[in-house]
Amino acid sequence: MPKAKKASKRHRFDYNKDRKKLKKQFIKKYKPRIEHPQIRHAWDDNKSTARNLQEMGLAFDPNRALPVKKQRLIGEDGESKAPAGVVTKPYILTHLQEEASLPEKDTKTLSSDLIEFVQHMIREHKDDYKAMARDEKNYYQDTPKQIKRKINEYKRCHSQHFDEFMNSLVPQPMVE
View 1 (cartoon, rainbow, N blue to C red):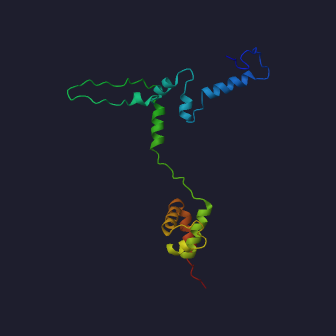
View 2 (cartoon, rainbow, N blue to C red):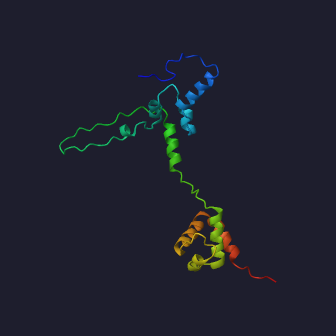
View 3 (cartoon, rainbow, N blue to C red):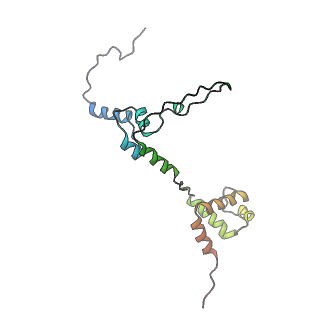
């Protein structure tokens, strides 16, 4: 059998490689950055991932934390619990629970093109969705229902802008 081309080549030290940089790259890959500041602060590099998470009251293996219960016959009573580890850093768990209980902010926005399209349709046709569907600016040939959905989405995502826009459409009475 033939050998690989470079298999018999003598290994020489490569002076062009920066060993310090290679070691840093390896460490960075081996220990990824923890995004959550509380967990990153409490993390101990000398301990394993499972041990660190156990001390914080978090689960490393979800199958062990919440084992699947096997079906048993009615007469059997052998209950077994998963071993509960000692939580030495409970403040992380409470902080995570507080953070999870906060209401999530709706960050959905619409593109500027879609906002302009909706404003044009309302300005020209008011509430006539069939006329909107026939409008020449309806490039994507949206049906009346699709246009109505887009308008409702605009109302939901940008309610303040929509109110301001509707107020600007109402003709102001002339004061002499």
